[in-house]
Image 1 (cartoon, rainbow, N blue to C red):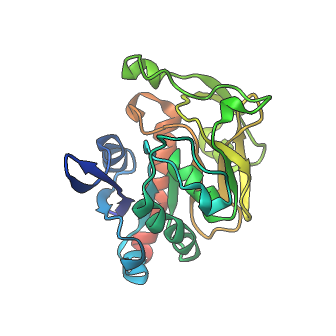
Image 2: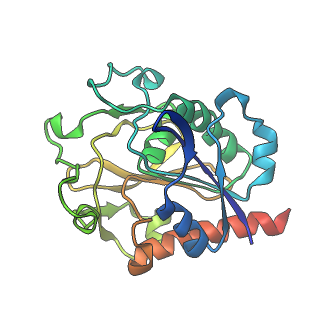
Image 3: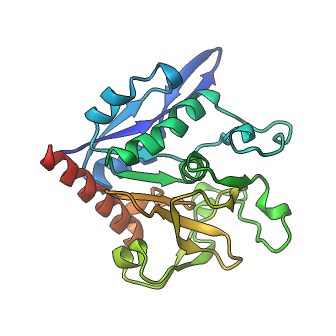
Length: 247
């Protein structure tokens, strides 16, 4: 069984910091990718990058309530009250390009998708709904979770792209729970899907030797009940197994 690392958030719970990963991501790796999920603590520069990359057959970069600190991409200061996680930034931003260069399969979701763009030199809109021409991609947090994670809009898959091959369709409907989005696409990234307003919803690392995909939506939410989410995690798991079997 392949071993897939999931870099953690660092959060205060009460007065103490905890390194944590959401259960929905753990379940999606375990059952969806048929792999062993393992938390990677947000140690930043103290991380032993070579040993970490040698240990894992894949890496999943998750969504989070926190946003990438804008100084990493030359953006303006965040709105007051924005949650940041400097430990996670210091761990994931250096890790993503290292992992892909080493041939470690990568799947990035929501914050992870935004981290991946920043790690490759891209920039972010901090409040997409305030940018003329774009939809409001946020969820209504007053609603029950099933309603927050319900499908919200269509995405159009790029002809000849990897996701089109995995899903076998030209469009699909996805959920939408984000205020940030890709402003300028990072170098070496190729668009895989766009929302109706043109916002990039998925990309891949074009020259990667292994699976290296980011999606803005949340395929981990009740993935068992969605054909395309199951297909995405199955493809990620297959890439991780291929790496495990080759070593």
